[in-house]
Figure 1 (cartoon, rainbow, N blue to C red):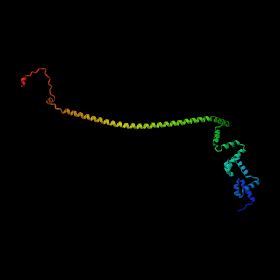
Figure 2 (figure 1 turned 90 degrees about the horizontal axis):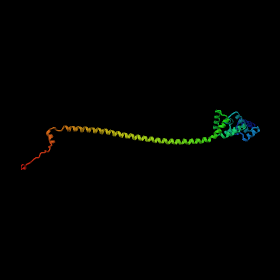
Figure 3 (figure 1 turned 135 degrees about the vertical axis):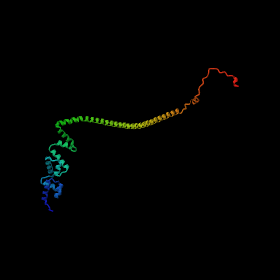
Figure 4 (figure 1 turned 60 degrees about the vertical axis):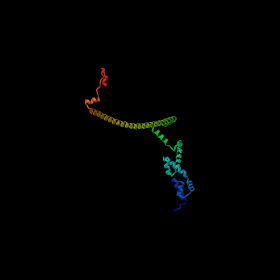
Length: 249
């Protein structure tokens, strides 16, 4: 392993610093302490922090994103973002930086608002006027919205109650229809029994008629027999009968 002398180590430290290496990386590759690195940079009129910040600003001037800068200079995310803020501060865009700090966690609603305004062709003054109008009417709109939402909930409850009543009505109709079918079946059975009884009665009447005809044919037409059954009736005479008592002895 080749041992470097002091000048070689200083040259290596400067070369690594120009590449944007951090103190930790230079310490590991050059085998020197952080104090030695700082002394070498100061001796060369360089400061690592200033060198990195200058390169960072140069990249931002080239329209690089914080992600691209962090990758190029091996920076942590927070360091790249801090340099990004400083870059805008240097451009005297302090209001934008303040707004960005407020919306950085969720900037998309504001980005979408800008896109909508641009797509609709609205000017800045019109956008401001629209926002003022919206801000003035927003409480009333919210109140109306809450009222409509309460009314909607009431209608939903009423609809649910109506559906429940209708379901009960349908269930009751099904029960009544079932009972109607049962009663119709009973009526049909009784109708069948009625027909059966009518047929039985007709048969009995026919038998009775036949018996009566048979009885009529069996009566004897002999006049003597008829006289026996029906003796002549003697009408009382108007004449006076005189009996002699001696005829009795």
